[in-house]
Image 1 (tube, one colour):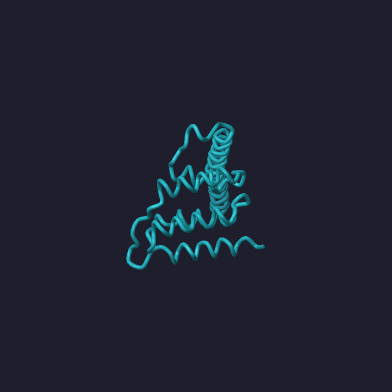
Image 2 (image 1 turned 90 degrees about the vertical axis):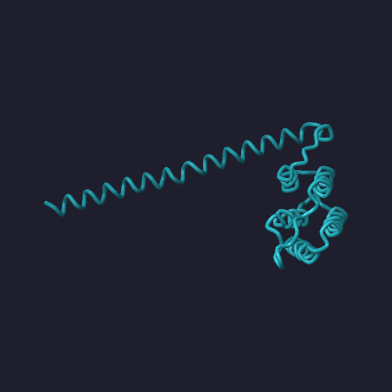
Length: 154
């Protein structure tokens, strides 16, 4: 009699645990998908408007434009120029290590090397301007460009 109760209790706990795990994985995915969908729709609506009238210089906004595979060469070039103009200066190195904020610039370099609408002039111009503003990061910039170009898989 006692073993039967213990078995039923264990099965009940397993069912409750499975339900809770289901709820755990269900909530974040739907939230993430709705956020991605709203971000995509807002980016699409921004591209349909005249971008020259309202230039958003927020770094995350510019990175989203650069990461968007549908960005044309003109939009991409303008976003890169705004990054250099407004966010080109990176914090000083922390000893031998680059500042954690530099990861954003590595991501930008890697992304423009792989972007379908980026050309060599854009990459070279951004590379030179970033090196000019941040000479102590020259080695890291060159490594990021090399990794980006090598990842293209030509």
